[in-house]
Image (cartoon, rainbow, N blue to C red; front, side, top):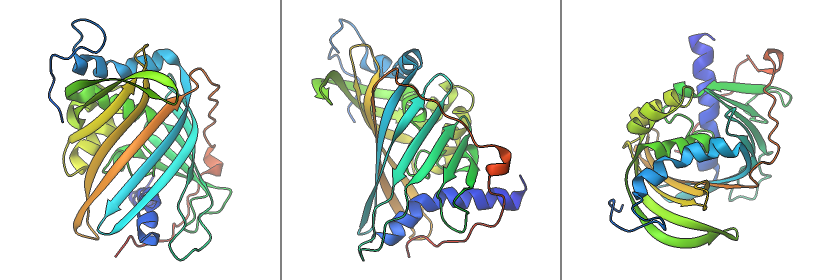
Length: 280
């Protein structure tokens, strides 16, 4: 892909977030046990990504809330994810604008190692075509830009846990879980991440306002992530301010079929993508 087309596709992904904003107006590692004598909370959290690979696949729900100035919007998604192949499919619903205009058609996203594919993107892209983005070229590694955090990347980020505390037992969607709160370092997570995720996390470590990411994670008794919430912050060059993002991933239905077929080259849009401005 030429440099001009690469920039266009990067811009296309970014517009998932910026279109929404434009149209819509840690505790330290302690001695607390996690239910298992002698367990280090930070070590338990760092291992959670591996348990998802062992689980194979799951259903997923995502929620991304963004706030900048007086504007706050939420993008919701739902789909499936294969943690062994690191392939996923999400359907994202963008919010309607305050004027009551017809909401954007749901956007279908396919997540793959090093790539993001989007359909129904708009911006001049034909309805039957996909837009492909190299996630390593995104300044946030697609933790934010696509409107949903890749579920495996969300778990892989926890490999960079620096501090964590066990806050006790609770429930998520009727499942007994252990609640941990802490801070992860993007650069450290990138070093321990598998190839394909490593480059995306490394890009995020450089692109975010800070490489330190506060999180809350809820693990079931098998150590699997049931829910994780990250709080990111990055600089909005257009508004000359910082955007606060809360990204939540809920995993359930482990073992559910997760067939994800990536588009063929002829189905990927190679034309011009209409330029859209973010919020003024």
